[in-house]
Amino acid sequence: MAGPIVNLGISSFGYAFGEDQDVASVAGTYVRDPERVLNWGYRTFHRAPDGVQATDLAAAAAQQALGRIGLSADALDLVVLAVSDVPEYLSWDGAAVLARELKIERAQTLLLTEGCGAGVHGPYYVASTMAMQPEVDTALFVAVNRISEFHRNRMNLINTVLSDAAVAVVLRRDHASNRWLASEQFTDPEHSDLLRIDFGGAVNPVPPEGWSSLTAPGGHARIREQFANDPDSFQRFLENRYERLVEVIDAACTRAGIDRGEIAHLIYLNDSAASISAVAEPLGLPLERTNAGLAPDHGHMGAADQLVSLGLQLERGELAAGEVVALCGISTGRWSATLIQI
Amino acid sequence: MSKNPATDQVTEIQRLTIEWVAEILDEPDVSPDDNFLDLGGHSVLALRLGKYAKERFGADYDLMVLFEKDLAAAAADLASRVIRT
Image 1 (cartoon, each protein chain N blue to C red):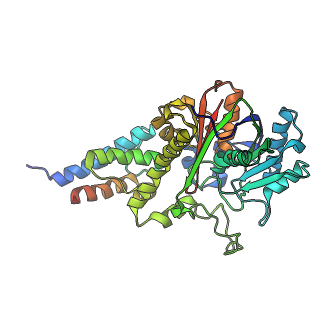
Image 2: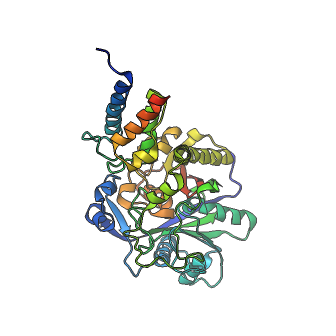
Image 3: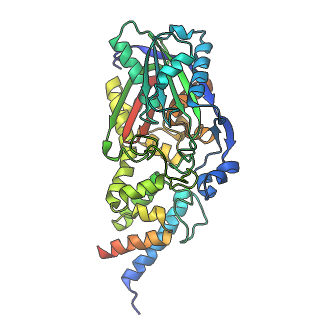
């Protein structure tokens, strides 16, 4: 195996979850057809209390990650924050605010807002910074998903139950375990409007009168608008989702100088077991070597999914030293993979 | 009395659609009135269903019909394209 371009590894994990909610008990308050939601197979999701925002979850996860290794936030050279749902405010740097919450007086910061996949390719920006700036030794990467229920219905956007959580990792130069090997990403911009929220930005600052996420058409309506008259394009869009995940993992393997067969575990977003299996099968991995066992108890925590699963599987002893874990995910039109060696 | 081959094929597509959906979703009680998504179907399972159809009939389901209408309609739509070709 060729060495990575820069040596760094994850030295600590921290988590913050919204309150556990029983899917079967509450699905009927979000959608008129709760049976459809129950059939996705989720048991539990996390819902942050109304006053708890993304920054609160991110800061709590960060403090846990720092506290577990006795590291002061002042020691951080870089803070990268990935936010995968609606931010608390517009024209507002959530990464800077997180740094302030951690009482950091001065550090380099970066905010990623491209969606769920940012939790996978976020470590690339840490590695890039370490490669370019020899003085950067210690970084914090936080991925947070806090659904704004005003804007989104967490049970009818996509075929997952959207969930509130944050995960934080401390990445240190020359850390010998949980080593970053490579990240790869690419974007096909054709369908980049697919999951957008139509109001709240400069084009439509406010929603139509009487609009509610509980009654508004869900993600399926957007799919219909995009593909109703073009079944072939729709078919290709769905096929591409999975084929390109394997493609981006292969590209990460090439960059790391390893073979696809050396991947011991796959961590995809917290999707259904069938969807996770569709990515795992081409890699020759059974569901037991994926995040399929964790997903039903957490729901889809946006950008936090993959690193939450990595951390929890490590803590459960499910990942052995030396094994290569492939994290992969999709934002709208962006495919990402990161390889970590335990 | 000879049977109409086109009618036979429509019947077979309707029957296999129900069988395949039951198998893919591991759901024994599937009826023509059911909707694929309501039964717990989603994109990757729809692609698997489409693969079965392609292998057997050389044509795929219209996924939008499959997602929005009942299984009888999805089978009828597929049958119309299979018989036309």
